[in-house]
Length: 264
Length: 247
Image 1 (cartoon, rainbow over the protein chains, first blue to last red):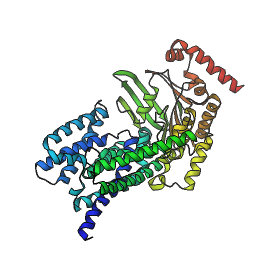
Image 2: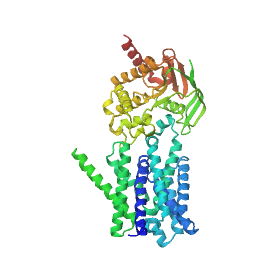
Image 3: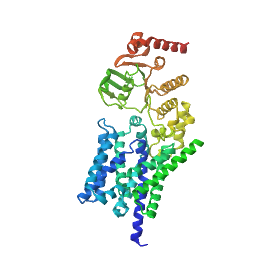
Image 4: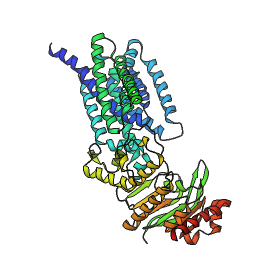
């Protein structure tokens, strides 16, 4: 195997490791804050970013990151004002961006944006993903107490002099970055599954929030690595394959937990 | 006595309806201030406004200085399946930096000691969702004392706790007040508690009905204005309690 082949094999693995560790950790808080579907909205706004980048011939990653940041800020701004409710806002963002994005991109490119494509991943993408993932994981671990506190009892956190709004904004931005990073591997349709499913699997049996965080990363890592192996073997598209592996683990744990619980 | 917080002409509306108006009083250092009034009279809203958890109000709330403050809410809705143990809940308070991940033995002992004071030390590793309402309430009380606060807000601290424990809870609060010169703001339905422990009372029914030393200002007339026609039974009950405990 020459160096180019080795790198070509290494890239998807590095990106998968970055995603498998960082997205589920974000997912822990997304689920506990009942904001899991925000990742869906973000992904579809990013689709619009991809579409515009392709149309105006600028770097796709730039389009993705700019739109992820903008979408994060917009969701945060709308969420804290008015009386629409988060689900309604997510619905509006989601469908509008999806419609605009689908009009702008056509045919195969649209399918790639939806389902992800490993072959388009460049060295720059890999480096960026590894750095972003490291930033996300390090931030969430270092500020775990704060994020957990505002997710569980924002009022008590506020009395304790935590700047709840600052951490909420911080969280939406981390979520946007995470989703942006994963778009190219799993695609816009399925990225939120990588945020939600491993963390949801960990929640089935976790009594401690620290345990849920640790297990979500274990499931995330297992999912992407096993998923990639299946992609390699069957030649199936990475997005749906990785997500199906993730769901299989979820249902298995759910079943085992139900059996164990009724027998204990 | 040194002023801690001054409330001047406070007015709060909820869903466009005025819930509190013309509220003016001071909280001084060392006070055990009881806030009383019927359901819906705005007691909780008053406390939340003082704590900065409700920002839609008119008038002024002035903190002359902000000591270490803690808050025991009346009720806190949380998802039963939320993965959080009692210990982790306490670590929100003291598990700063990375010690949330691996608390020191000293921290664990401190948590255990506080839980033992309200007789739920054995629940330290239980999930919050598996606790009874009374146990949750006791846990909140224990948590509020964790960092030796100088000011505590209790919103009906004994709600959901059976009567024998209730006496203990108030006694515990009173002992801490005596020992540490703690300032307490206490929302309570029970006049017996107010008579026994409070140094000052603020009576609400939208307006400020009365304020001062409980034994002086809680006259039958004032109680009628606060609670309406059902006041007599409450009043009698309060006095019976007082009698039982002084004889």
